[in-house]
Image (cartoon, rainbow, N blue to C red; front, side, top):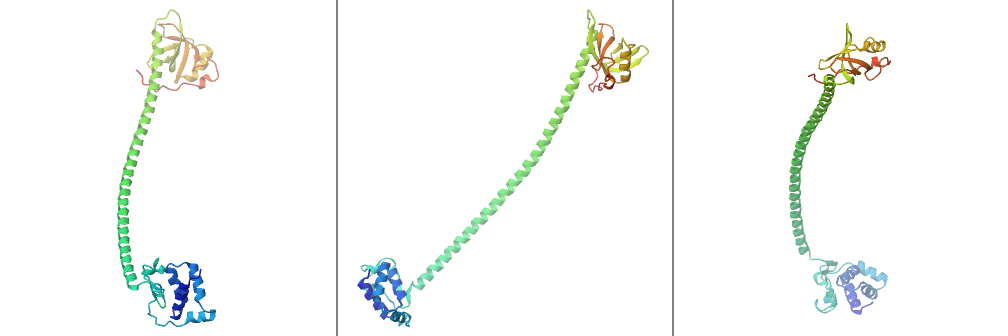
Length: 283
């Protein structure tokens, strides 16, 4: 909305050689509403040709200060133009300027403060860098030590597993040997009748026929050595560990063979399936 007070002020500044843009900026900085400034400047500005001439006219008294508050009358404390930052702004003929010396002083102070802040930040970053490097080195050392300890433990576990396997094999061998021993001892247990036994040993031939020598050096004679099926079955097994099953009479070191390596005499596969030599220690 047009304000006559602003119209008079604008006309006064134009006559004093102040550029229209500078007048507008001064009023806006003084806190006047933009619409009031626009309407008042339109009312105070001559025709477009004249306005252009005035705008481009050389500035008279270039260093003359222009105070929109004083020009409109009143004091900075009571006049409407005193609102906002107008009381802190000085207006020259070529437009508003902040006091150069004060601005320059504040600029140097700000630059100094920024420099101090940057130095502090660099110092903090440097401290954090070296601190983290130290921690990384410590952790790396600990990791290397842990890796070495892990390898040592792994080697121990491997050895324990191997020892367990060896011990298991020994136990199995001792168990088998114990069973063989019990079978051999059973040959001497008094029995009222003949019993069926299974004995393992090394097969050999003598003038009396086939004999079986057990791991504990008990020698059993094969009573039915002349049986054709028994003979054909035992002949290929001479000198090998063989398992004989048959009847036995207590107190007599003879066995009547009914099976060789788990198969009846005369079976085709009997001669090709000798028992492996026992690895159990002999008593």
